[in-house]
Structure formats: structure tokens, C-alpha cells
Amino acid sequence: MFRNNYDNDSVTFSPQGRIFQIEYAAEAVKQGSVVVGIASKTHRNAEELSSYQKKLFVVDEHCGLAIAGLTSDARVLSNFMKQQCLGHRLTYGRAMPLGSLVDMIAEKAQINTQVYGKRPYGVGLLVAGVDEKGTHLFEFQPSGMTEEMVAFAIGARSQMARTYLERNLDKFADASREDLIKHGLQALKESLVQDKELTVENTSVGVAGAKVEGKKGIEPFKLYEEFEVKEWLDLVSESQSGGEEGEGEGEGGAGAEGMDVDS
Image (cartoon, rainbow, N blue to C red):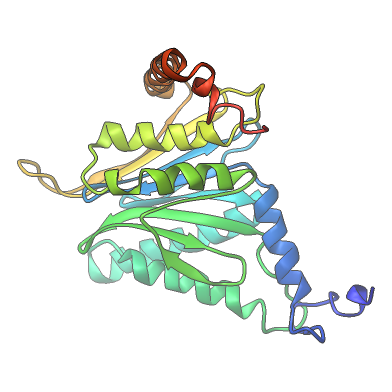
């Protein structure tokens, strides 16, 4: 009833202790296209589902991010992260630790909730990459809160993807690069409405890898788009079809579970 008295700026609390502009920014994240991130001991990957705008960005050789929410705000944060990574390389001659990088954007976002005339960034991020301590996956929220995850999904209908990730959480740590990508795409598939499919037009994959035995250095963060992801999409479709046939023989209709996310 009195919400409009308290949502003119980001430093005014309502009587209930709420900051409505932060809640509006969080709502923008919920309405963005879904993105999924998964971590193993050797790789971090992020998948995105979007038909209109690019949602995956390379930040530095060792890291990248996936976004859900306002793309313009994401570009501001990604450009800031690129500048910090470049400055760190010039100063110290090595890649910037992921934890330090995420802390910087968290502080930058949190300042906007303390200064009159500014507004929270209306975007959520999944920051994936590798540094000297290993592989990392961080979630960033518009309030400035960050948290390291093993697997996570943000954006519209992301709860369906998170449910899949929770069911398969124990498989990720020792998963191979290909299996990790397949799990990410399968999680995306779970979030689709009934008449939608994963295609080369609306799906992209980003992967970064740690040092592996017999190889030097890291696997740089790389984006795979359009027909580069077709092989993975075909594998997901084949495994899904095989699962449906097997389940249908036993329970008569149970094979549809997990496909119709509107039901």
C-alpha cells in the first residue's frame, strides 16, 4: 500500500526493513533467461539459454561469466572485471585470483545500495574460472552478496534446473569435461517449457579447465556457440530418448517425468 513511499532510492528502508530497489533488481534476475554453472575438480562450465542477446562473456584467459537480468548492467560489471584482471596481470604478471575478483564486484555493487542517487545492478552473475587454488564457480546477486557454489542456476524457471543439479550433485566433482557439459545442458533442458527445445540458435557453452596431468598451464575459458554445440546437444537428446524408452517399458508413462516442466 505504501510501497511507493520507500522505493524512490536504494538507501531508504521500509518499516519492515526491506529495500525495494534491491528487490526490484532481484526480480530482473528472475525474469532473465536461465543460465547454469557446474564445477568439477578440473573444469568449470557455464551454459546459457537465450534467443536474443549474448549472455556469456569472456573476462580473462582464466575466467568468464554467464548473466541473467539486464544485459547493459552486465556489460558494466564485465568491463570492470576485465580492467581489474588486466591491471593485475600488468602489476603481478599472473592471473587474478577468482575470489579477489568477485570480492571487487561485490563491493562495487554493494556501494550502490548505500549511496543516494545510485541503484542496484539489475543482473545476476555466475562467474566460472580457474586460478592457482583450483577451479571456482561463484554466484553474484544484485545486493552485492556472493557465494561459491559447486553447481547453480539463475534466471527464469531456474528452480527446475537447480532441482536436477541437486539430484546429481555427487557426480560433478569427478566428472570429465564432456560429462560436465552434458549435465549442464540437461539441467537447462529441465527448465524449458513444454514446446521449447535446446537448439544451436539459443544455446551456448563456456568452459575453463585446471591443469591436467601431462599438460602445462590451464585450459583458457572458451565460448562454444552455434554449431560448435551441436554435438553436445545431440548427445543430450539421445540420452533423453533412451531414458524415456526404458522408463516407458516399466511404468507406463513414467518416461515423461522431467520433460514437461509445466505440469
